[in-house]
Each structure stands twice: as structure tokens, then as C-alpha cells.
Length: 38
Image (cartoon, rainbow, N blue to C red; front, side, top):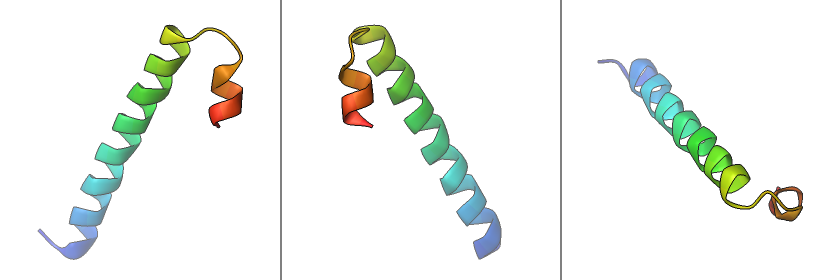
């Protein structure tokens, strides 16, 4: 794999983790805390 491909894979994994964390926070705390965190 080239450096370019590795960067794409890493960014994809990070994006998936962030998306899952945001969904978890939204589901866990439906109050206004989400807007405060972000």
C-alpha cells in the first residue's frame, strides 16, 4: 500500500468512529448536552 492509500484508510476509520460516537451521545443524552459538547 502507498502512503496515500494508508491515509485514506485511517481517515475512513476515524470518520466511522466519530460518527458512532456522535450517534451514541445523541441516543444516550437526548438533552441539550450534545450542542454544548460540539
